[in-house]
Image 1 (cartoon, rainbow, N blue to C red):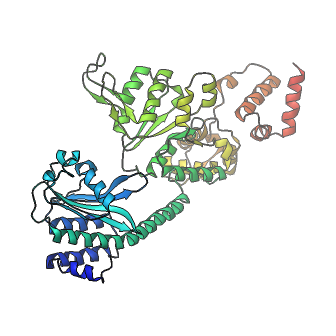
Image 2: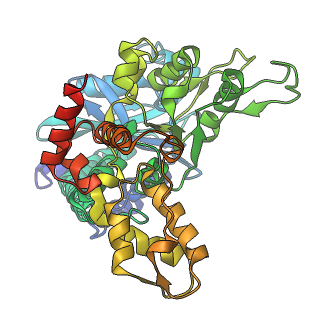
Image 3: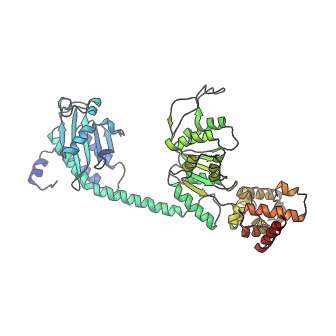
Length: 497
């Protein structure tokens, strides 16, 4: 619209002083320095008031999909309306098709409009509608309607609404740019946060830095995460960190251990039950998936659940819905799933002990947590962390003590180190942690071994090789010998077969 054209000037004269004042107020709001989500809603409230409507609607139109989406919708009580079906889709489409403002003072008596089902269902009587034009295309539609006959729905108000749509059109570029800047700001904040250290995740080794980066990246998404690692590596700690760094951090975080739990008990815990579903079910109980909806649900040792329960879990991941035991009602849930296991799921799939389709559903974003033996350089940091946790005293660690801790292979990982340090603190009567305070338990089979020293060497070597996935360099380092010694021993053992 060219505001200097004679026809436009003539139309301006038809607008009342109140409408002029409102347009001026709207232009100030739309051109304000601070952009907020309520900006459009505030202007729509003014429109509803000045044209004496009951409701107002501001929608964006997708020319390719031929669909409308709500930018904002309000009623005369200044309340939001979320459901687009409460308005007439037929009238919206008619405004788009004609590309012209429309005025219907008595919709029910107009044969071209009263045929729309939405008009009848919503009992709409009067409508004002104008298109929003941007770059010579229809960007959206502004609608004002009433369920009563409104004499105020006249040409004057239609002209006012048309001017309003033109002001909005001019403001769209600014709003779009501000939204772009806001998105860029979020991306920059995410980059900065990606460099942040994760609380409670102790370690400065390269593998831990890579792990922290992965956690920061996946936390901001809703992707299902599969944590892979040996027992004691801190899988639950990392699951909690993912939740705390996510947009769901103000919603529930729940964890369920799935190992060594009877199927029926685990199923009732996960999905809940209806009163009378089984003997002892004397009340309705929500399942953990339902309670965790909106937040994060951590399933630890997922490999241990039965094939029957795996099928039900697959349904949750596929359709985001559950059904309580003994119920026929489907409940929609929105819980982000993080699963963990210390087993090889690929191998279990090949052995038909784990569903392949469930594996792929869980394996959206796998995160491998390194065992402590692969980040021995973090042992001093972890040791001091646990000393501080278990003692108020300032305790010094002797060099021999630290060497002893660093040379151990830690089959029980961080959890084992924590237990060893807690035990050492109890045994320590001074402010010095000595080697004798460190109790490293060997495997019970090794402790009661009755063979010769040569036999024990063989047992220990084979055990360490298995621990380090046949890596001879790591095996030699853990035993305090050369790789050459390991090679000679293996050759000797093979020669005696």
